[in-house]
Length: 399
Image (cartoon, rainbow, N blue to C red):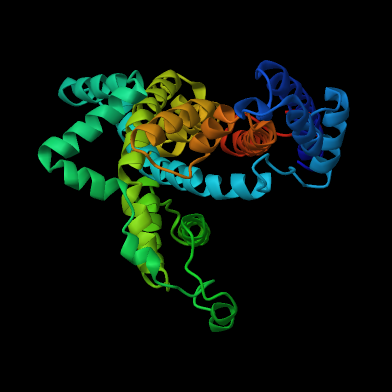
């Protein structure tokens, strides 16, 4: 396993280097003009501004200067004067929160219904589920957002829609202590938390609860020889997160920002659920005639045990693969949903604004962070494949 991880890390580092190199030159060559093109000024002033920003130098020299900063974990400064990492970090809070919440909801439901459909021969159950999954899987993101908006507006009111998508200003006007009620820090700062800060703290609480639930699942498997179903795990994480947010000093802000993202989460769930169900159903149908399934039946296991402990375990692999490979699709859907619901602060809006302003350091820095996250997820996926698939074993350096 150590050699396997080393080889994958080295391969990932080389891939990341090639990706960053290509990204830098493509972005700088494809965007017409530069950041100064949006201002009306004389030639001397424009040249002075370009020199102060360093964009008058040859592209190769700019690349080496930027790459040197990246190696030292510095993504540089955007043309508007804000550090790129700060802008990306704040934007990632919204995007990660929505993606994590949608995954926690869509994955257990889609996986449970997918495996049930694959082992269920009742047409009254399988046909409606499959039809709904196909509709959602092929849905156009703007259409999903429009239906959600019109649904809330028609069922409730236009004011209700605005309330769901806008923050309560009064809740954010009060100063709150940070982090997690530290009086000493509160005395030094004495300022209200921003939306990204609240979201990052909510994500930290949720991540801690995820670790606790995984430990409980492992203990239940060791002691009682039982595994917690994904739906139960998701419910425990969601309930624990809500309780954890409510015990903090920023609970009002936490629930307010969570409520403004509900429609965005619902839209991403609709775009994700159908794919999870269809991939799970197809993967489990493919395993029905496999040798390890026949062997499990020959051992006297019940159909439910064969389904959940053997076929469903293998079906996890293509589902996880699709989730990782589909990150660009989810990201594109999030950009559209954020724009329609007027959600500010997401990574999609940040990139959209940077492209409009021709802020190349911000564009390249944001895409670099997305590339690193994607490579890390692919590495985690390969490890999961080696662990979950009983047909795969790591022997020396071979998979």
